[in-house]
Image 1 (cartoon, rainbow, N blue to C red):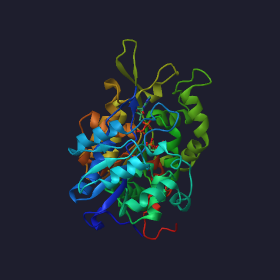
Image 2: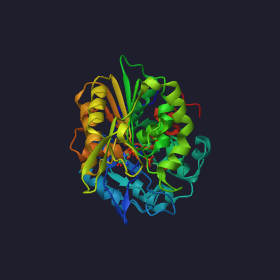
Image 3: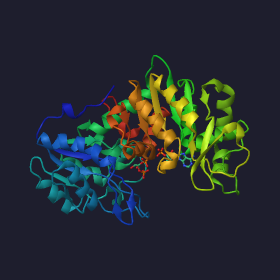
Image 4: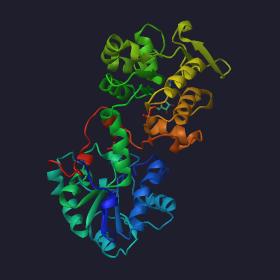
Length: 405
Ligand SMILES: Nc1ncnc2c1ncn2[C@@H]1O[C@H](COP(=O)(O)OP(=O)(O)O)[C@@H](O)[C@H]1O
Ligand SMILES: O=C(OP(=O)(O)O)[C@H](O)COP(=O)(O)O
């Protein structure tokens, strides 16, 4: 069964929408990012349909530098929307209720960081959260709830799972788009080869996905730290190994069993890099074939040119491709070749393609690629991993008509 979408919401309602505007914060300054431009698709539809719109969102977690108010978020969202968004420095007290009551058709307020209330963060079942003061106070003020925070849908937090039990609920544009694309990898059957780009630095996440999808994927294109861990497992001396706290060493220990299992049971699905790139004595990009790697002196920061071409070829001949993690340190121009070459090849073919991971998705923007060239570019991190590994997301499940809650 499924959820209702904005297409089924009558016009001119009082609507409470939960977005995920959680953003990088640098010395108190909130950085603009794709979460704003994507959620604008939902907010714009709500404004154009004459709704009175209150938005709920979170930022950071208590105790962290990123835990700030949503004042700057309101301005950034307004810039993308080209429409005023009023910041309300209160989530569900009298100030918030007054602001909600005074909303006119097409007006938008952004309520204060919902994680500044005690109700939000405890991980609880929807039934319990529906009873919270947050939900019980806000729900009667609205006709409908729009769940749009897909990237926080793996959290059983009050504003994610509580409202749908207390209100008429709909999935927003981001929620529906993300859910359909990201879940299809685990649930759909594709005619032809299925390929996963497995790279980046968060090896455990990537290797969990590889393990979950090992019978589904025909080619795992290995790069980044993940690639080095697999190379090490088959006997190459790659990966920094300087002291006990070394990143590669701890990642190796954490993932050794799953890596060994994949190597033993799915050897023909693993596509290893055949060459790697590093910075030489003059700080220039240099390449070495994997067969020639003799020591662990270098940080290998990209796959080499031959590997990039081979991976691009496989990607171009696949019917479905999804990406988790970059093939190199693409933020540095010297080491962007693997990531950019393979993303471009994916963008140029007609296959079903999904790119996920906050950092990897940034490469698309950074190197001027067109997001529309891909079937879907996710704005989710943890929720994307959960979808790929076939785990259900509580924030999506509660929106469904046949939800058990
Ligand atoms: N060989 C490498 N050495 C260091 N960093 C790397 C390497 N390969 C990829 N990266 C980094 O990995 C990051 C992207 O992957 P990851 O950490 O898995 O994030 P995400 O899942 O958010 O995209 C990029 O910022 C990139 O610079
Ligand atoms: O940014 C988020 O998740 P992500 O870092 O996995 O993409 C969500 O807003 C969830 O935030 P949380 O991980 O503090 O619960």
